[in-house]
Length: 445
Image (cartoon, rainbow, N blue to C red):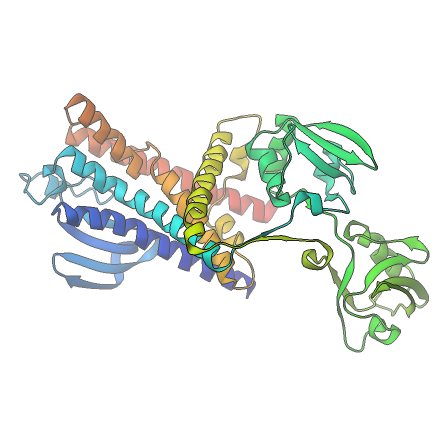
């Protein structure tokens, strides 16, 4: 069920993005009276799932969910319609329009993707605002996994600065470490100020591991649920209890829970003594461990209960500049991610993923706020990738049009055909590499 929910969110999100992107090309073409022969969601090699004709354009849904397209008459695109290109140009064809009009048509998709992201961010901020965990509110310090320990961090450390800069929003720390190529983390460890050096090679290992969240806020072990008819239920455990110790060994935070679990499983057939904090009162509980070695509780951290979160609310007028700022910041961060691909020390190419990786960023439960937030991010990602100067992408067409505008000489149609084919092979290779990475990670990591 979890996989199905993620897949449905991915398909819906990509469908919205493709329709908006292609509408950008479609609308710009119509403005300049350029004929659009087809407007498709998904590709339709061989046949279409659904189609109808309205005016001069065929609208439809293809069976191959790898994107979508508009077929603009007189344009060398993925359709490679050489028969049409061999005929004399018609006034309503793309190739007959001035270079500046063709440039606007090609930028229409990217423009609409950015506008969509800005619109989503403005709407989210005006309706839901923002909620975040201030770094200053992480009162129990951080929790780190083996990667963090390898760097020299310890559970309970409090992060003060990254390269001398204080960070307000705790959730931005892992991203800044990677994208801003931070080289020094200043921490407070039991009152001692310590500088932790960060190497590019280490951050490369973090990226390659696929676990950038190696730094998390340290949270208390609170009981999230107690199973009916379980040993824990009979012993008197309650939801919300904060575990303090087991058999006189202090066990307070989530990173210590493995010891709690091992202690329980090691006392099958006997009792363990647990102390919990309930309503500011210490409550001792003795629980008999059954044969399966489980007492019937689940635990979880509770940020809203244990930390003072900050909220920002926006009026519609305030949300507009905030939405623009959020979109610009997202574009900047994504460009930094692309830059990392060309830094061999960072090994970012190992983290490149395909549809599986994208699907996994969606939550297992349907959350509309999270859905639209991720759709806005994917819209920015689609815009940035499409504007790259690679033939077969919008950016490739823009590159050749800029050449034409500057030199006043258009590349030959034969050259554009070959460039389109090369670009398609490059994109196919990237698609195979990215999804191959997903398959490798699934089976071997």
